Image (tube, rainbow, N blue to C red; front, side, top):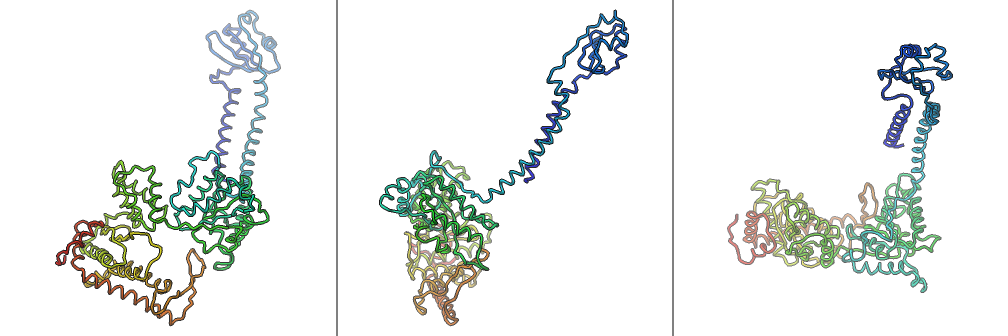
Amino acid sequence: MNRSNIFKNFLVLFVVILVVMAVFSLFTNSFDKPDLVSISTIVEKINQGEVKTIEVDGDKLNVTLNNEELVTSRKEPADSMSSLLSDYQVDPNKLTEVDIVVKEESGFGFWAGAILPFLLPFILIVAFFWLMMRQVQGANSKAMSFGQSNVREQKAQGQKNKVTFKDVAGVKESKEELSEIIDFLRSPAKFLSLGARIPKGVLLIGPPGTGKTLLAKAVAGEANVPFFHISGSEFVEMFVGVGASRVRDLFKRAKKSTPCIVFVDEIDAVGRQRGAGLGGSHDEREQTLNQILVEMDGFDTDTNVIVVAATNRPDVLDPALLRPGRFDRRITLDLPDIQDREEILKVHAIKKPFDNDVDLRRVAERTPGFSGADLANLLNEAAILAARRNKKKINQIDCLESIEKVMLGPERKSRVMSEKEKKITAYHEAGHALVAHNLLNTDPVQKISIISRGQAAGYTLKMPTEDKRMYTKSYFIDELAVLLAGHAVEKEVFGDITTGASNDLLEATKLARRLVTEFGMSDVLGPRTFGQHEEMIFLGREIHERRDYSEKVAQTIDQEVSKFINSAHEVAKKTIKKARPYLEAIVKRLLDKETIEKEEFDAIFVTKPATKPI
């Protein structure tokens, strides 16, 4: 039992005891208790003419004296008042002066006085055992409901803030695919009359934050049907068989509300390929998956329950889960392009007060690779930044600064750099920007800053003018030169190198290796890939890569990677030497203002600056 519940029950029982004792005390005590005297004393006072009235209340005598003093006495219950006074030989003349009143005892008072002393302990004992048994039954009911699913149901009628396709910006193709599901849920007879079978399941595939959950809610909102939402991880427990029981309970509840939609988020938590994994299979997860397979396409095929699942790891799902009859359709949600990003920003900007200078198109241009969740977070950070600055509206500067905050982290103005480190950082970032500006296949520079953000001492933002799906070899070679420009400019200007280029070297090495092993861009090795990654998960990490090449080829791969890096390094050095005056001009501007925007950066190259180094 829960310790807090036990304490609460004992507290309630204690309060009940106090109340009963207070009620019982009304029958046994009075607030102003008179003096208790003997019968002989009462008789003596009567004979002396000091008694005014005598009230007989059962075996109790309440006596009021002439001076209004109250005294009390007790007699035997069987003796009457007249016989008692006669036995004590009270003076008849004095007795006639006394007003004797016999009070009749009420039925409630009689039974309360007779029964309560015996009944109260029995009631308290019964109440105590009843509370204890109630707690035990509650624990048993929880144990019996352990196999029930924790699904969250959203009713179709009267739901507040119903999500529709109007709330989902972009993903036009995905909404078109799902529109057939909506038509079937609205009017299934139109499809069934032609012998059509609606897809049992729809699998939404896409990176995190692309709107898979939001799209599933929009389908339920458009179709106006009940919506059941559960995460794949909620099926799995430490006890074998619980997950399968929860799957059965989920579909049992869903079938009572047909037609309806069941949304399983992160289905890869239970839908991983069976028999794969380090150290054997996972019995609980496999039993849960088997039950899902049976419920989706078992013997019971005449149900209008449509399962919508979401995952960002479709490669690890079991083939039986993906076959026709279960997840018939796979809808891919890519990261939004520039047009979709602008629409998403407009949706999230509805309830935010923006200034007239805000250009969401420009914000969309600066956010390639951002998901819908990233864009929502961006505008939220812009609102927080404007509130921190005591503004009534959000302006363009707040939005642009929020982009950098989401990408790199907040500004670290408290981090004080020495003049030497500041100068090295300025040359480092100016080298990146200069090489990116002079090479043909790189993205344009949008901003340069030597203000620390996150782990970076400075940063250079390069954004493409248009969304790209395919990249050329020349683009990657120029990108390598840009990555190595910081290292090259430190060697060129100071004659020494620092640790500031460590992350650039790491990224350049990764990119050069991918050119050789994944993209087939090596002239020596030719158009083929090297190495196959196999899915063996241990502690959340991939630990196995099967090599499909010899040691001699591995040596050639290393040589080709070094060739790409060395060639790019030479391009960066030559570009820096050739455009040294522009480098000095960029550094001078950075040291003066710490930040250079795109327009100011492009203006540096309009006229040839002085060649005197800083």
